Image (cartoon, rainbow, N blue to C red; front, side, top):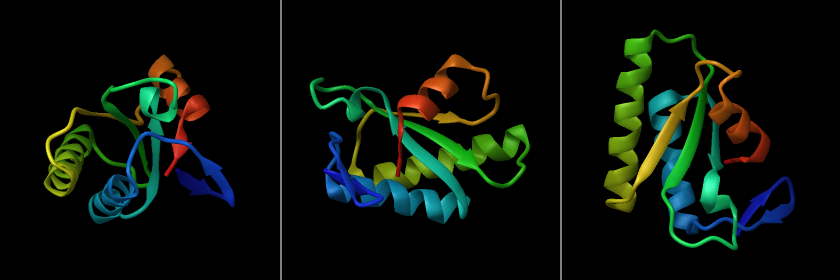
Length: 108
């Protein structure tokens, strides 16, 4: 259960996993937004990877985005252990995957 703006939302992550993801995001990116989307925000589904959508506030080159994405994944996996984590970086809001993350995702 995740509390967002005084509203409780069911997500299939532990409180520790959510804190680890948010902490890693802040350590690597500093500012910006991160969304959880996909099967982990649908309580009726089982299993599934952790789908994250990251919108950094800074204008970063493609190489910088890739380096930060790798640093973020290493940090998260060091905290929560080996899990399948997919990270989508904001590069083009017209991509369907980005639209899905923004429309159906939960901002952490």
